[in-house]
Length: 274
Image (cartoon, rainbow, N blue to C red):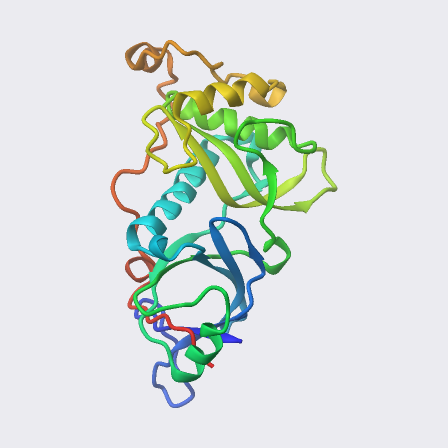
């Protein structure tokens, strides 16, 4: 086991002696899941035993503030779209997501992590997600090209909604996560990873731009869940789109860099240790 240690000035708790103490997050040295982008580790924030995931970029040169902040931006956009997507209320969850920097590593931890395929270094940036243990597996639920992957009409409509509510600027095309409830007419989901296509191709190498958006809609079949959502059009006119867009809705965007864990929750120290 390795540990991440936090000190939250915004919500420090008192020890029996009346002095504030550090909260710690223990996480497994071996990854729970690995793909071409991330090594995902299951963890717990102590003493509350809160489940979370620690996501370490698989490529060393992507363990930067910029790359991890971009991942957080994707989650923030998804949360903003979900706020407008009424059909997803109580059925789709996008957990809180932050990025943080590894501040220090103990000697014992170095021996552990140097033996793994994914060495953790000081100054590496990682992504932290508030994900429960039962939803910790990154299962591909909706491929980025929109091809059918099981029976997930709610997620397909959610993707369509992202296109509608962004005025056609981007599409939340690919989704990973877990099915957390199958008892209702439409399944419930916890979503942990996203792929976007945008007209300006601003979301990294997986963003295929206009071609990615077009490919998705070539496979997408609208259902009643898509009622009121604008269909895809290659002739994008922002002024015309805005004039036809409901004034009661606000466009979900994220301007600038998202806050880090430290900025959102208070001073933080994060480090693997034995």
